[in-house]
Length: 547
Image 1 (tube, one colour):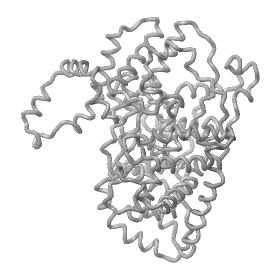
Image 2 (tube, rainbow, N blue to C red; image 1 turned 45 degrees about the vertical axis):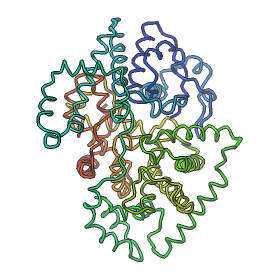
Image 3 (spheres, rainbow, N blue to C red; image 1 turned 60 degrees about the vertical axis):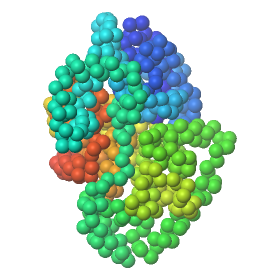
Image 4 (spheres, rainbow, N blue to C red; image 1 turned 30 degrees about the horizontal axis):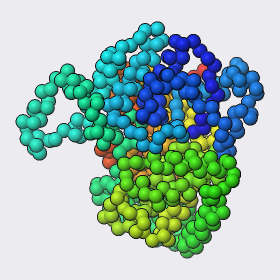
């Protein structure tokens, strides 16, 4: 996301500390700020909190160049510029990725991150009343939040009675909350064990699972139906969409996605010729446009940002840390940005390449291959080029219906966030009021849902299953994704209603416990989203703001 935002005008010391603490808390909770930067350091250097970058970004006007001098100097607009004022509020509330100057993998323990977030937020809330919160009280609040959210992992981490003996299980359940809290306090300095539990770190993507054992068995009965459709001389695309909506078998997914993306034509006679032409076309694009030593400043800035973002994708999976894989992603993203100057590259698009890459890689390998540790250098160069080219063209088709999400100010996302807010208010007013009462703005958690299409909230195999349905949506998935996000939020209503403070709500919303999800949960989520769409899609008043 573009960070070209002017400095805010100077404030009184109290207001500065309050604003700085609140922003620091929000950034730590949302995962957008480097985990190694503490709120104290941020407040101590508040003058550089907002970066005033003059770099050009492809397809975006520079604020310095386009704004009047008085606006650049003050950072404020007149009363008639509501849109820009709204965008400034939006820019202050959220950032969809890490800052470009941050270290790539500065990971702290989940306990330290949550403690820093809660302490900063507690300080921000107290600043509004001119009251100081002691270090001990802040740490106690943080530990309370950590203890609450750790319960979601106890069932996953605690050994079963029939595996480890009932005596150990009984002993663990007798621990009092005070004992647990004291144990957590003692564990704060020792973060080595917690560093391996990346899924508990707020704002980080869930620990991705590429394979799911239950997946193939559920769709085995559909393989024959897919085979009949795909072997027909003239494909019935409507029938393929209906069959794919409820999930595509793994062995049929690659070719189905190419057809659903309209990358391949329905006529079976023309498919090979089109594939060869498209893949050769991508090869020509690589030769003509992908030049790391280009003298164009805009292209250099685009490549630099992509080069920073790609290693951050799925850092827990060795496959995505291989240089060959990262170079493939860099080329796909860079060429896409050059071909779409209205948006250019926006942080978050890098996550959308991953499902296509995995699906086409699975097609080239045997079913029992361990993808997470697969060495790409053992794959023939021709096969790697095919995977890269198909990923590029399918990504381009996939993003066509959500292009306004990535233009200047990302107006499409802002509109969808507002629609989600209105939708939840009409579906479940109690949940809406609960979030509003505790100061949780929808933009603070749903921006990433819209920008990354839930790829950071779901395991990778669940994202792939979700995209089976998205690609099969007859009118494009942009509208349906809104109802998926609404169903996703409503799914966690019970846990959200149990949280009675801003810190607890944000920690839960930014780190939802979906690491054990399978295709079954995605099927239920999609069914609920379809019900909501069926109920409200023909009642457009529910998407209009109340007068």
